[in-house]
Image (cartoon, rainbow, N blue to C red; front, side):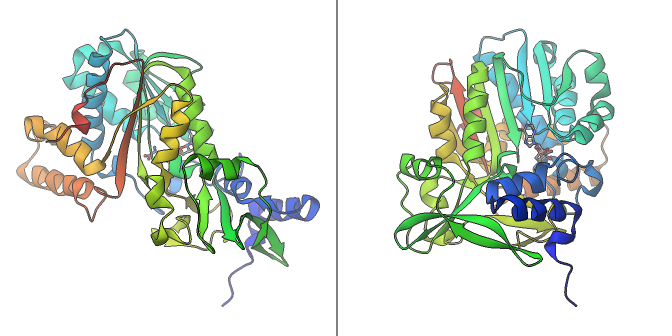
Length: 378
Ligand SMILES: C[S@@+](CC[C@H](N)C(=O)[O-])C[C@H]1O[C@@H](n2cnc3c(N)ncnc32)[C@H](O)[C@@H]1O
């Protein structure tokens, strides 16, 4: 049976109409619409389908948020315990990670909690609305608030995200006949199709040049210009403190090596990944691996320095081993519950789970060579 043409979803129809009227779209524009169109975008809807297509470390066990809270509390100490300390979570979704961090801080890190101003920043109004139920007591205590975007000024604190940057739009390019070409989204009858053309912006060539990357003949790649803008913009808003990014990705030399000749862009639906990016626009998640080298370079433009890059397994083990992962357990938990918690932790730290796929990248600004437990050998 032939599936319905891609142009038949409500968003597909809108995008097809735009292409008929004004010509092909850059893939970044197509992806932006698929994920963030205010009415039909994948992330604009409430999280009704959560777990249907993917789950993140936050969903595995609260230990991820609890250990992150310990790292944030240490950052607060390294900054001289400022009041307030702004913990700004970008792409906070419905507020699950915020709840884990805040609940743990309120219970175990009281001094830090008293100084904390947690901003759960989320563009999607539907997801932001869900934060009220998730964060109730912390909102009432004045320790947390929801926001549509990052605060304009963050005098002292940490801006952090989990799986945000892989969901920012990317341009697609191919190196063909010695030239850098862009891969646009065009129309072939009722289907979207790939359409090569000259680069839509000189920023594409500059992006690869700045990182010393030369693609080989026939190689396809993504250029995450939106992630570069995001990190530079976030860095400028930060007075003193840290930027912490958890995501899957690589340094540029690995991201653009011969193992990734077709790039890393994937469409996700019901936990299945495919390269069929054009199917059902607005109904599937689209993601590309994060380029940590680019985050470092563009962060420097805003005064951010590289603190370190480690795997998620390293980060969690380094933070958890201090008290032998006692933070894993809830008060009064049964032995069966404790065994289950230990099994879930393995998913977060084992190489074949999320442990080695996900990386933790930390940058700092206005702090002298900070030592952070999450980056230290254990
Ligand atoms: C892949 S989801 C991750 C959600 C959450 N961090 C988690 O771990 O479950 C990315 C989220 O980032 C949000 N988002 C995208 N761009 C954003 C931006 N510039 N500022 C704030 N949120 C953004 C999306 O609406 C979406 O909810």
